[in-house]
Image 1: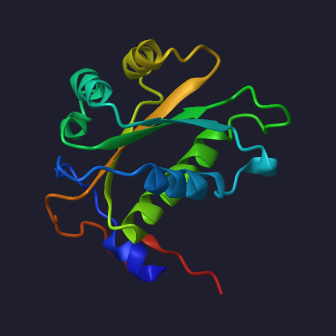
Image 2: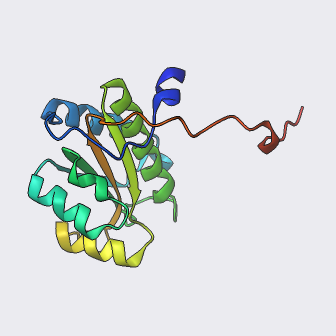
Length: 168
């Protein structure tokens, strides 16, 4: 697991000639649905996109998702804040956990990803609602660009002991 975590990077250039397969998408979505959630409420739905036309539209409307123009797939996580028995306001954590599972599973499959936030930006949420017909109270949470990496950026994360308080 440590190797997957260490090798996860945000990829912004993808090989357009290498498609993400339906089997790979299913593995990514299964990983997402295995994420923990408050009271096991699973307050999420997913939109899996491989349509070049739709990928280009996402790149055109989301200011930080331009990499969708070379990605060969996208997963949009849709939050369901109205989920019954959901402890108030926990859906962002739950959808974040599902997102991280997708990012790590992608590394295991040799794929690259880039997590592009949509929630809580009203303009981005409105654009994604319009593109995908997402009705309220559902919330377009994020866009995850996916594909075969066409770059190998340096790892940016690191352990910073100054940010840790140990209580023994």
